[in-house]
Image (cartoon, rainbow, N blue to C red):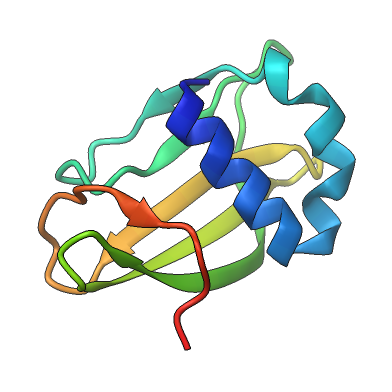
Length: 104
């Protein structure tokens, strides 16, 4: 993971306690960018075969540097492994830099 991706995951884990179990393994995470128009969604790569969506752990709303709202959700696969971080900006434009604090 790149530094900003790791920072995002740590922020998400602070706000979604169920993700805490993955934090000790963050250095070994392999991710790939998803084709989402440069909004920043990530898919986790695992060596244990193909993955399929299982469930959403949770979602938070933050702001992008331009002040536009961004929804960030974390999904697990059917085996309860990390599946993806889904990022969606309200106007579907590319994200600039997420402000890692909850939108109030």
